[in-house]
Amino acid sequence: MSEQDQQGTGNLGEEATLARLAAEGVAHELVEHPAVWTMEDVEALDPPHPGADAKNLLVRDDKKRGYYLLTVEGDKRVDLGAFRKAHGLRRLSLASPADLERLLGLYPGAVTPLGLLNDAAHRVRLYLDEHLVKGPEDSLLGVHPNDNTATVYLRAADLVDLMRADGAAVEVVPF
Image (cartoon, rainbow, N blue to C red; front, top):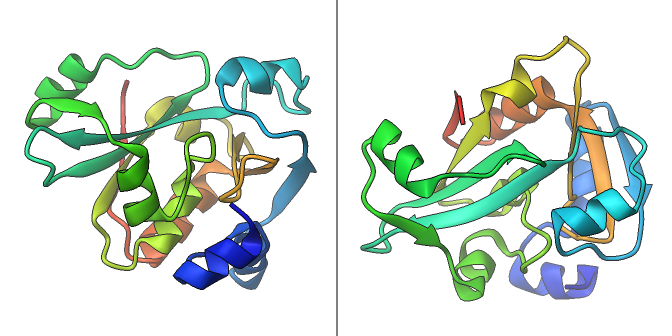
C-alpha cells in the first residue's frame, strides 16, 4: 500500500512511521529491499543482522472480539493452541486480510508491531517473544515500518517502550 493510500486512511505509512521513530528519539537502521512476503523471502535477502528479523502473526479469537499480534523470533513456530491455553484465551485463528487492514492499516506481508501505531482504539494486544527482549542490552529486532519493502532494525526494548507510550497493551512472554 502506498504512502498516499495510507495517508488517505489516516494510518502511518513507511515515511510517517520513520518520522515517528525519529521524533520519539528511537535509534534505528533502515534497510530497503524488494517486497518480502514470508520469512524465507527475508532470509534470501541476506539480512544485515542475521537472527534479528521477527515473524508477526495477527490472530483473533473465535468470537472475533479479541485480536492479538504475536511477534516471535523469525525461525520459531507458534502453537496457537498452547498459546491460547497459556493466556486463558478463546480458540484462536489467523485474522483475515480485511481485519488486518481495518485494525492496523496493513496488508499481508507487511504485518509489524509498528502497525499498532495505527490502532488508536487499542483493539490489538501485542505479545512479544521474551527471547527478543531479554537478549543483550543492544540486541536488535528487525520489523517492517508498515511496508514490506523495508526493514527497520531497532532495540526490542525501545519498541516495547514506544508501543506502551502510545497506549498499546504489550506483554513480553515466552513462546
